[in-house]
Length: 227
Image (spheres, rainbow, N blue to C red):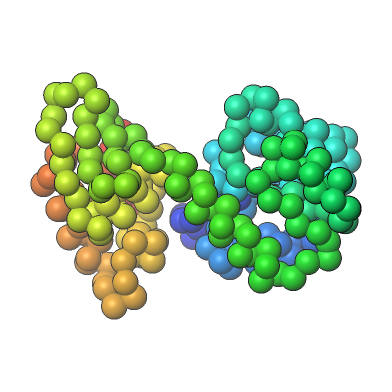
């Protein structure tokens, strides 16, 4: 049931060249990203406004709505997802225009695939750095010091280990997703670990934060607690 749900950062790819879009989508999926694709600027704008993404890749020469105009609207609507603009225009003035429109990076076509993947990784790290905390029920997971805090003061701060923090962060970044044990094992733990390790650390987190922090979805896996 969840075989097609790849647990990884979400990427919005807005590219009208069907062959290039399919190639990039395949490559990014193989790298562990969850890719949604739009083929024109209007569709990309809708997805950018209604979805939650860690990185956007936007072709500049889009039909219906030009790539930089799309990006300007997203920034005006307070969508801060890091964006990489792809374009055949390599002049300095074009690069400056792209950055001024709100792009974090600008890549000239034709490009080498390893460079594009490296730039996407860099933008994802930038997104993570900007996301200093994640909501966990009525509390916050502060990533910088691996601590769960309660803004209301009703609960004491709770310190987590690296693995506890990694597991809770993986669930909190996609709170509506049900993760299988193998997915969480790949996201958080070492290759030498087994799926039983996931169950062990779920137990640790529940012992520290309460059973409601993580829900068990019978026959499927785990999900961030919905209470």
